[in-house]
Image 1 (spheres, rainbow, N blue to C red):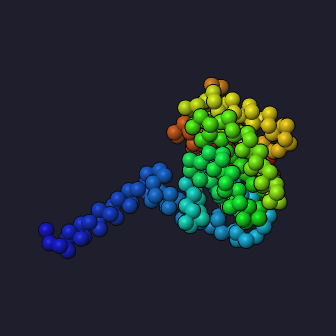
Image 2: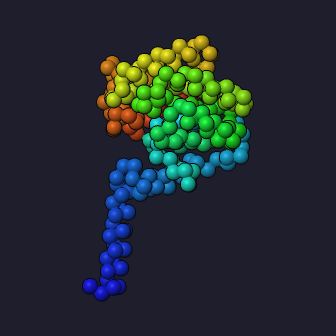
Image 3: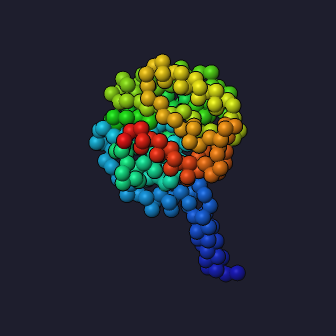
Length: 229
């Protein structure tokens, strides 16, 4: 085959691969395509104080495209950004895949940089996964203190269910509820509307047993809207 035709063939393969990736959930092409469709939701000036930011792990991050500061429908924070009747002014998504609560604590200064009025915090799922949930409550206390010292109000949430660690997740949620009552911090219920009685995800609420599905994500956005509206 002539060199020119080889190049053409390679280009065609790349184009087909990119086009196909748009249809594969959470692939780079899929994430970018969905994000571009919703880019207008994330145009709020980051230097305007008083909004709401979200801080957490992959459940918060969803398929957010950090380089473009735009997201899609699998992050409750990004769903809230795209709702016309949202009770919050979107200030940023500071979710990072795979992080434990201590790693999330280290990023509190980043979340405070936009000078938000409210910081939504969801942390602990990866503590459970890594068998390190004993220190979660202490870390959340530190997060609350740093957020408050930065002039914002922290709003925490119970962990969504887990098909892999249902009992451990439920146990940490019980400790979260007791801690929130004792310390007097706001705690949203991300568990009950997504969970079956056995502690796993209810039908349709997750695609992988760890992260809420698009439907489950909308449910979590509803929880935030009801609490902050």
